[in-house]
Length: 130
Image (cartoon, rainbow, N blue to C red; front, side):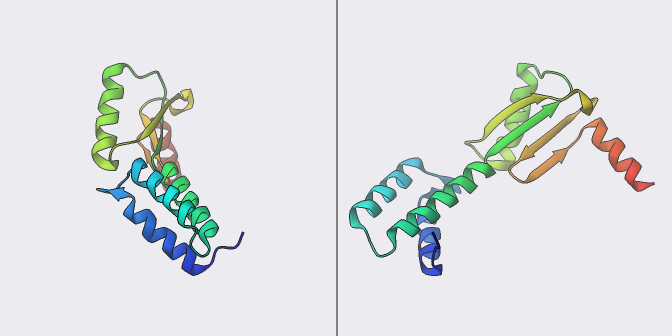
């Protein structure tokens, strides 16, 4: 389905109204979708498709993968989660993976951002410098 510029702009405005302090409010989004379906304004299916795309992008932006060479204990996980919450906000979906190739340290992926503090990452950066 091709989405018109007007429908995409409307969806972005409505999606912006569903956010509170930079965080997506699920209740506001649910109310918005139900009101759109009930009112059926012009091009409402394209608006809903565009809102769905924006929600998927927001969920991807909140997905976090923490890779480490060894399993992290509860205190280390809590410290990582506190730092990520401080920098990226609440409602993060954090997944922990063990990757022995890292040799040590952490590689954290938050949406499109990659924070590489692993030994392997440092070795790779050093080898590229020569």
